[in-house]
Amino acid sequence: MANRRDLKKDLNWLTHEVISDCLIYLEINPGKDEAPVAEIIDELIRHRAESFIEINKPTTGMNRQDVKQKYNGIVSNFFEVANSSFEKLSKLSKK
Image 1: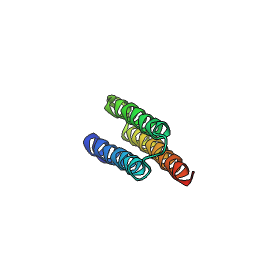
Image 2: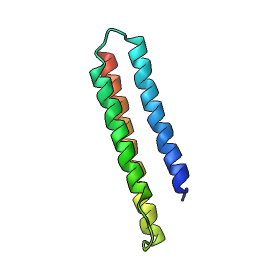
Image 3: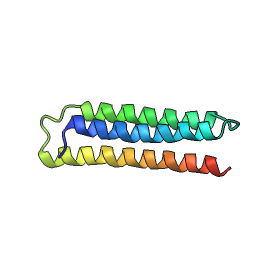
């Protein structure tokens, strides 16, 4: 299992990828409404903060398998949110 610091770095990297794609979309489409893109970014940042809170919770008293399951769940949930963000941005670009 990776340590917490590496896990946070990975979530930060994925967050920055989504945000950079959103900013590129806004740069390429200057006439489009910015509100939906801002909502995508806000939702992603909120989920990132929630994930960090869960990562920072102490795991003392938990066995190794439960800790691994906890972190895998956090990562899986965040990947779903990031994928959803990419899909929403993709739908915006098709309009």
